[in-house]
Amino acid sequence: MFNLGIKAKLTLLYALLLGTELIFFGWFLYITLSKSLLDATDTRTKAVAQIISKTVLRPSSSLGLPQNFDQILEKFFGIRTAGKFIQIMDQSGRVGPKSSSLKGFKIPLSNEAFHNALKGKITYETVNIVGRYPIRVITYPIMNKGIMINLIQVGSSLESNLDTLASLLYILYIVIPLGIILASIIGWFMANGALKPVDDITSAARKIGIKNLNERLVIKGPRDEIGRLAETFNEMIARLESSFNKVKQFTSDASHELRTPLTILKGEIEVALKTERSVDGLINVLKSNLEETNRMSLIVSDLLMLTRMDRGGERFEMKEVRLHDIISEKFEQAKLLARDKNVTVSLINNSKLIVKGDPVKLRRLILNLIDNAIKYNSDGGAVSISLHRVDGFANLVVSDTGIGIEEKNIPHIFDRFYRVDKARTRAEGGSGLGLSICKEIVDAHNGSISVKSKYGRGTTFTVKLPAL
Ligand SMILES: Nc1ncnc2c1ncn2[C@@H]1O[C@H](COP(=O)(O)OP(=O)(O)O)[C@@H](O)[C@H]1O
Ligand SMILES: [Mg+2]
Image (tube, rainbow, N blue to C red; front, side, top):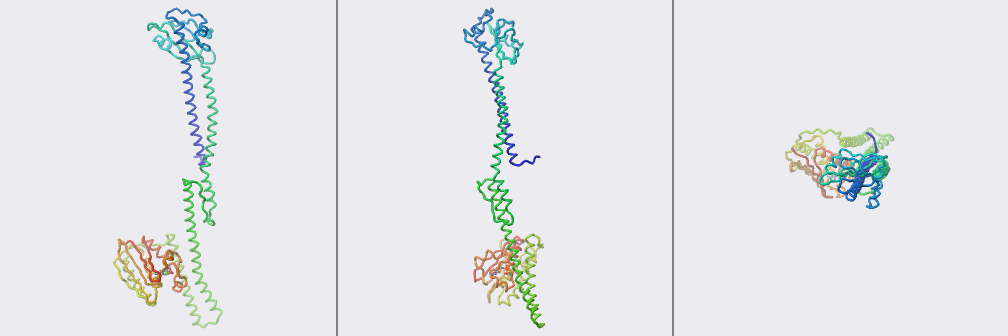
């Protein structure tokens, strides 16, 4: 339909409602007034007829009234006859005396009025005789012993009634359109006032872009629908800001992480090219180059995996996996890793447990945790691994007696590229992506991962996966 703005719609609705109301009110006023005016006229004509019947006419058939009886009425009985048409008839309806105001005319007697009169009933009618204005006529019977002997008709011009009604109509014709116009103007201002905050939000929101995500809408008004809209909008910007910052952080961390091995590579190659080297010397440089290249390709594949998991692009081949078998396999691997570091690894418990999961990812998860437990251990330390069922979950616990993690660092260790001690972890070959990958893998399996650590004493990671 019409593509009207909310303001115009509200205004239109407001004007329409008020207009309808005014028209109904006007109509009601007109009807009520015309009825009450007519009632008043009827009451007056009836009063005149009654007085004539009681004072002028004697209960006899003779009508001893002079032609100028209306002046007599006025003079002696104080009945206002001006503007009244009076005529008196006998029982057959023949016109006898009548007021001078009637001149050559006479008031017509309808069949209905005559029949009513025969039964002793009064009739009110509106008739046209002279002039522009209709006349309200009462036909008033005078009864004697149940028989109608005379008829009095008193007519009263409806001129003033109609004039009054015309004036009312005239006023309504002016007042109603004026009222509607006024209502539209007021409605427009009201709608404007009510929707001003929405306009404010719109223009403020338009100004917020990627460059100023830290800005927020100023919420001035009460906490009504619009206040809540602004609040929700602010919350949305806050979420955008935080995820945008995360992306920025991630990008800068990733470039940083790749820059270090690249710098080393570049330096080594440059030095090798500048100086005369034996074949053995060059082989050593190449070996070192390979190490850095391997590190970079590891970081890149980790990054790729993380971003794929973010976008839901990483495929998880979910199947029934015998978790205890993977634990046994990784336990053997761990013993080899630990040997160089003088750390002992023990498998405390390995309950048979089947979970629905991606075996490749689960291997990655378990190896990451065991690898950390060995890496961040102390000379002669120990690592223990256990798997058991708790409340329908496969609980995997990897515990070490290593360096531990300070309380303040614990909330960050699952963040990408976060490492407590950069120098140490680089020497160990870590880039700080291991635990964030663990977290993503656990989430994709509807599980949870938690950590408990005592600084300088050791750390325990617990993974819970829904068991079959
Ligand atoms: N078992 C552990 N004991 C002590 N610190 C740990 C342990 N596991 C992880 N951390 C800390 O958490 C950081 C993040 O771990 P991770 O994501 O695996 O990265 P990386 O091992 O590549 O450094 C590590 O750098 C280390 O500081
Ligand atoms: Mg690690």
